[in-house]
Length: 100
Image 1 (cartoon, rainbow, N blue to C red):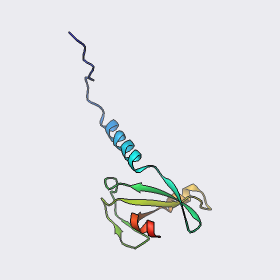
Image 2: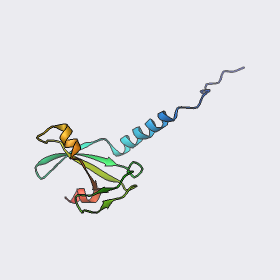
Image 3: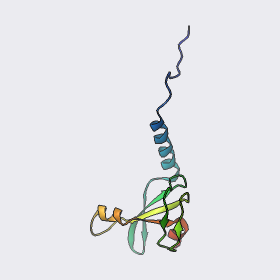
Image 4: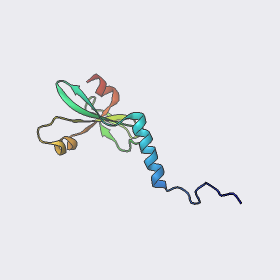
C-alpha cells in the first residue's frame, strides 16, 4: 500500500492566523518612515479587517469607523523616547494624512 504524504491532523488555527498576518504584512508592508513639516513619523497601514475600534482622526476631527482602512502615525524622533512616541500615536484617515 502506498504511503500518504498528507498530514493526518488538521493544521492549527493559530498557524492560519499567523499566515494571514504575514500575508497582510507582505501586501501592505510594515511600518515606514515619512518626513512631514521637518519631523520624522512612523506610519503603519491598518487594513479594513484589522480596524476593530473607533478612533477620532486628528486631521478632520471625524470618526474613523471600525472596518475602515486607515494609518496609524507616531513620531520617530521624539525627545522623550520611543515609549512616549508610541503612547502618542494617532489613527488618521489615509486621505487626511496624505494632505496634511
